[in-house]
Length: 58
Image (cartoon, rainbow, N blue to C red; front, side, top):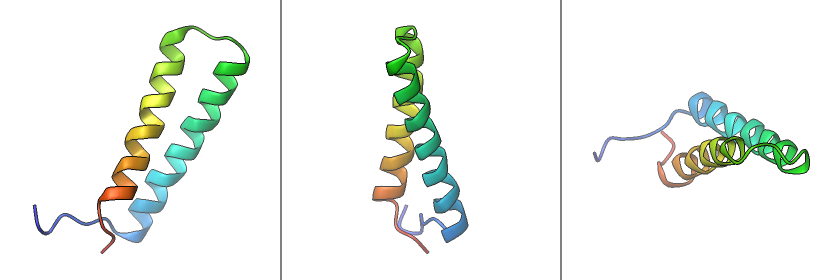
């Protein structure tokens, strides 16, 4: 586990995925979409941000 790092392009792609999921979450919230959509997009955004936040860059 000591050699677990992210390269810059991979971290950027994960961050972009988090931003897109957050955008979809916001749209689903405003449109009063079903709860499963809120959970899906919210969890994707949170998981992506936790990965980028806690796994160091190479």
